[in-house]
Image 1 (cartoon, rainbow, N blue to C red):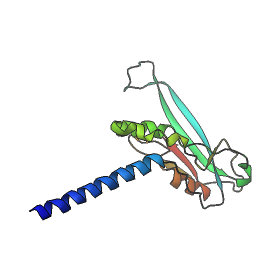
Image 2: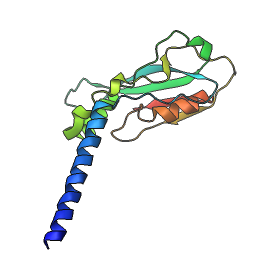
Image 3: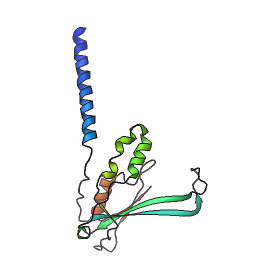
Image 4: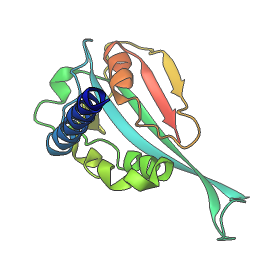
Length: 166
């Protein structure tokens, strides 16, 4: 019986050590960069808030709170038009959403708004084509339009316009 307990304790100790090391590595080295899109275009971005006048939110305590819908429009940009511009940082809303989904670990996501993306705010739309296909992106309940930025950036680099809705 004694021979069985010692390997079990050793396995548990090794498992705990590995878990602590992985957690430390993620905490210390959590900064990363988005992969570069493979297409010919860079990515432009503009945020638009639509207010539906006369329609009020029914799920808030503020009775004067008009219904608002947030859109993010990403579009193809000629790479020459973004030279010298700073890329946008990852959306701050993602931190809020992740904290709502997992309040216990909310402070673990505080670094997300520091991550650079491959998008450029208000850059001019490419005039390479007269028309571009448009995709609508709805991330779902308790999610944000920024959650799939890598996939969205890849589609944009191939010549799509993507409209994300919160």
